[in-house]
Every structure is written in C-alpha cells, then in structure tokens.
Image (cartoon, one colour):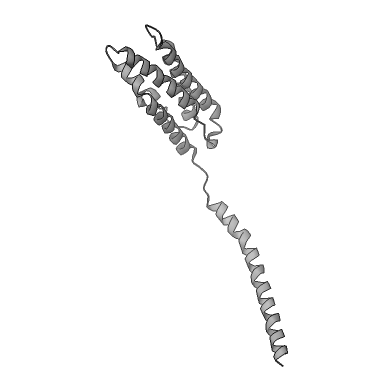
Amino acid sequence: MKKFWTLLSAITFAIGLTACSAEKEEAQPEKKESEEAVKPAANPKSVMYKFYMSIVSTINEADADLNAYEGAEEPTPEEKAAASESAAAVASKVEGLEVPADLKDQKADLETALKDIAEAYKMKAEELKKDTPAFDAADEKFAQGEEKIGAAFESLEMNKPSLAKEL
C-alpha cells in the first residue's frame, strides 16, 4: 500500500510540475511584448536639442585659449600659439561627434555642418601660424556649418539656433 501511495504522489507531483512549467512558457512571450511596448520612441526635437547642446559643450571645452586670443587687444606670441593649439583641438573634437541615429532625416545636413565647423577651426589654427592671421575665410566656413544646423532645426519645425552666440 505504501508503494501505491508513493507512486501516486510521484505521478501527481510530475503532472503538477509539468502544468506549472507550461504556464511559465506561455507567460514569458507576453512579458517580452509588454517590455517592448513600454519603451517609448525618441522625440526627434529633444534628440536634436541634446545633440546641438553636445556640439556647443564640445567646442566650449576646448576653445578657451582661442577665445582669449580673439578677445585680447594685443595678444602675445604665447597666446597666439595656445590659440592655434586650441583651434586644432576643437576641430579634432568636432570631427569625433556622431549624429544620433534618431536624426536620420537630418543626418546629411548635420554631418556636413560638423565637417564645415571642423574645417573652420582647422583654418583658424593654420591662420594663427602666420604673422598676421585673417579669420574671414574661417568665419565664412563656420557660418556655412551654422546655416546647415539651422536647416536641420527648421526641418523639425524648430527655431534656428545661433551657434556663434553660444560659443
């Protein structure tokens, strides 16, 4: 009789275990679907603004010596050399920026803008190696990049920012 009860409880336990594992397998796909549904889509305007602010902060991190040179009445040769290095550093950092994937419709404008801005800083770095540097061509190139950023903002029905004023 003991053998019968032991066999019966083992069968009952096996059936119960099978039933419980089948319920878990069915419940898991529902959980994955709900997790995917919870993840919201990124707001392109928010992504654009954050990307723009990353451009501003990236430039501001490295252009202090260049700004000091441009603001000085009679800059010293040491300030000029530091400004050249600062401009080259900005160009390098701007080239390292990547356009977020959420801005795929504005990617071409933004990548071109980053190239123009980096080129403008490279031009300033080269001009600072001359006896009398002239930044007109570099400023024009920077304005082209700024205009392309503005076009990307307008494509999202946002107001154009002024990158020059932020720096």
